[in-house]
Length: 310
Length: 310
Image (cartoon, rainbow over all chains, first blue to last red; front, side, top):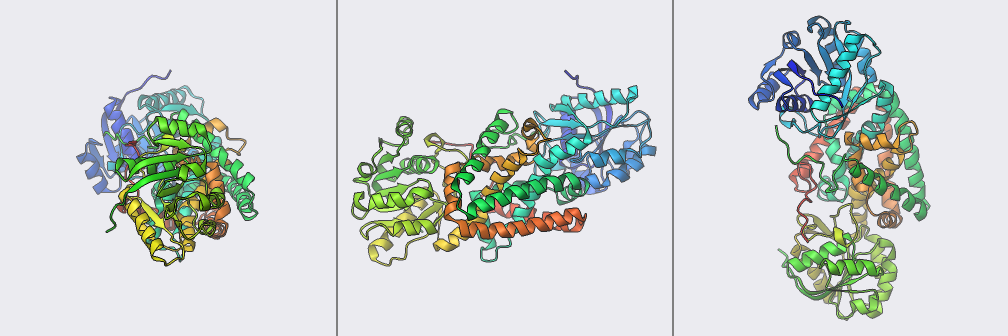
């Protein structure tokens, strides 16, 4: 059982959905004395301060991280490398640095720029909504969700202690912690997150391109199934662009498998092979049941996010 | 404005999610004096009667429809032709017959077996959940959803009056009514419902086939996006098999377009074309917004089904 840990000052770099949610969760559970938001957008900082997500805002990364014993990188994956370079001089000795990105192999490479006095533990809380910005954050986002840690290849004691602190932080905000290597993470998440997002983005684009079906009809009859895809297709375009660029190999691999399966389905429809279709469709029910049973979804089907409390 | 209409006795053929929901909605709004359930499964009838969805059950179609001035065909699309043949002798003169199937071209063909004394108005309420059986039905399912009517090519006055009665029925249970021809319906719904279901079924199958990613991991990390697909992939396999067999041409057409779009995305990832990805992804947000604004989805995102009242 991992114990919750406490920090003096946390600097949140990138005050969006995940950064704000972590700030709210740490404050609510008393895991930090102070929260500094760092963002290049002053408007975002002002809004985050106004609604009590952060104590203070800072547009300068160097100033913002000074004095922080925990630095959270909640930026799109694409800027991680630049941020790490800036941190190597600016961050306090012994600071724990975590990120929350959806790809871990590229983050491990970016972390190579950091000196040994800083302890970067790559993290991926598998949680989120399709909304963005500081107002979208809420304290219970991580509860009962999984957070995957992919520690760097370092076996010095201070680093190992830092990994334990990172585990304690996530356990402290209600998540279940899993440790694995970055390559396995990137393949597993290509399956459960990246490919689904790519398919949703693609379907939404394709639906709007059938010229004999009006845009208004796509919207009116979306309750037939289409709307389920639009939720994740409404996710942040920049964040997702970076995910696909950073996890290219794994995404292309699972996309290839999906395309094969789709070709099999297409053939079954063309040849009116009802048995093949029925068998393929029957798999969905049991997997859904397993996901509900594992507490990763509600039966309602409500994604467990009515009670958003900051 | 269409006026709600009233019936003496409604026979519901197939007491599943949609049939039960219509029964509950008609009872709640006082649109019928009596509800008879017809189903080949005696257990289903007993359960439906016990929870008050139907007044009485009947396994014989002939006995069940006798005396009914409204007959609702809420069976899988594949048996529609056989049911129509049975109805041509059994149904009372002047009875209004509606179906609730997701494909309309094949239903129009099945309706050709009916004599002129019976008035079949093909209907498709674009509403549903992934659940099945009489217990899954609830009275508010059709509220603010669209119901599409695709009347047969008949211009006799009794038939035209029957179409008006069908419109009144759906308006009476809270739906918005739209009239179009069957071919256009089948293409529009291939886009907004059939293709999304096919993609969801396929993705769920493909995810479980990446042998280096454990079944348990697919479930644990499903909150990353995958779980959104599992909801509709949990839908009734028989019903959906019949949809794809009955709407083959339109589904293959929109599937072809989807595959093209997916190839474009695949190429953008392979060549690290961030601009192309970002532009494609940005479309999702605006379409989602439009769907929420049109009242076909909640922002929460809760599919609007917490308050299930029989």
